[in-house]
Length: 222
Image (cartoon, rainbow, N blue to C red; front, side):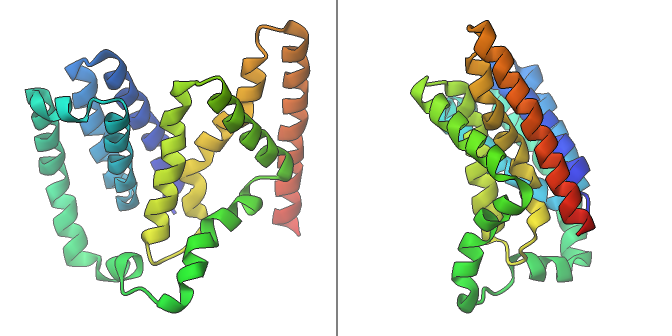
């Protein structure tokens, strides 16, 4: 049940790596590699970060250049060296966990696997929050806000990765919660130029947060 600390480490890794893609400074890349390994050591499921970053590099057209520079290979070497002990420990002591995660798939539950995490959204987020998320996604597309691509990829990778895993747990979707929170506040952010609408948007946002919290408490007590 280490999802909360893993999520914290994931967001730290994501921030540092994003800084690398913006500045191309090797220091950010080395820091990303080290923090990424610490995150995976916190819990192995954090390995989903790797395809997220690689896909983001591809979209930013930095994928090939990453492998053309020595700092890219240094970062890869650091990751391999730091994760080899964890891989050996997991293979030696984690037979049950490996079987639960990537064991033989049961074709009878294929549709259940595909829809599980989509259906989990209604448990995690109330309808007002979901509506805000969808609105925010639409606004980001309309305004061509490329900054939102990073978090959109997070949603896609989390869904794909954990849908592939054999074990299905609603708690795993906590990893895409920051992305949905971001999209939920985007409509208010885009109203920043209009003071009246910006204030009104913040008031609505506060009431929705309160509603979300009340709804969670009712679920937990009911």
